[in-house]
Length: 344
Ligand code: NAD
Ligand code: UDP
Image 1: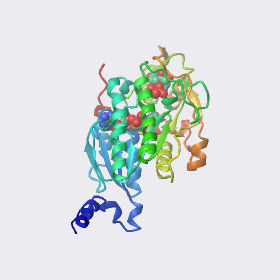
Image 2 (image 1 turned 180 degrees about the horizontal axis):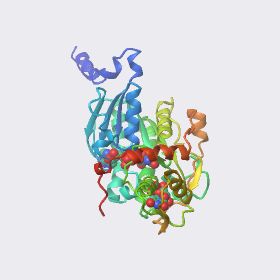
Image 3 (image 1 turned 120 degrees about the vertical axis):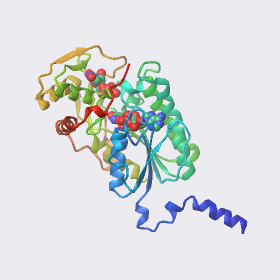
Image 4 (image 1 turned 90 degrees about the horizontal axis):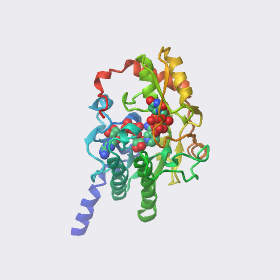
């Protein structure tokens, strides 16, 4: 009888999920690390809209309370202030491990911490997933391809990454997070998904995160010079946030562990073309100026999305022009006093 009692006690840990009836089982308890950030907050909103319970874990390193102000007080939303490099335990069915500074300006501010977030943060989240048998989606990045020698980049390409450059803390950190994810499958049978996310933009971006879309739109709206780094011939493929989030949620809910999946828009633009489009769409009088190219800046980036198309029945719907228009409207309405500019 003692062991049965103990067994029951153990089982109660699982009660919230296991004791649900069939109807309730559709709804999950989901942990979103980095949930106050750009992508994380969109994921939280989508999950809440679908009826799930959401725990948002964040230390506000690159985000602010205002980014999730609309979610505070929601009956199925809970915010936990926590640094993902420290262990964390909770009961949940799914984990989106999004916590990590993503903009070069942010991740280069404290590069050692960035590497720690990718390694320790991933180990902590994988360990949690293992313990409670949750499915976990690891946010990886197109940066794992480095400065690619092949285009478009398919998941089979192993990448071309400098191990000791200014971007390495992010690129190599994310490469290790992928390695960890697949070792957690091999050793511990953890149910993982790995998304290689390409440059994503849209409403909800931090105005001072230093990324190209936010910089250009803000500069254009304020009549400042548009700062193109290098000669602007480097390319990026920009994915609208709703498309990216849709791809991530589909990947999470896809039935079996598969290799990494590129989530991005295959339409490629030069940075100069982006600058010209922003000037045109904002009707700005700003002029384009050319500044030195930062170290290790990749020359090209374009995803091959065949795997996502086949496995997830997913492809992006919002093209750059339309997405930029929506993003410009967001920036026009933004109260910039709520955001602090980064200090050197
Ligand atoms: P973001 O900076 O807006 O959000 C990251 C969030 O993680 C922030 O809220 C930040 O405070 C939080 N965070 C950082 N360090 C943390 C820590 N130690 N503990 C807890 N929380 C921490 O960035 P984003 O664009 O939303 O990116 C989210 C994820 O997606 C990142 O893992 C990033 O590498 C990945 N990704 C993003 C893009 C993109 O274009 N947005 C592209 C590829 C990959
Ligand atoms: N970039 C630029 N001007 C800016 C910010 C960025 O020309 O004000 C360039 C940057 O050098 C890179 C591209 O835009 O080639 C995308 O930069 P971002 O920081 O958005 O993301 P990355 O893809 O480099 O991680």
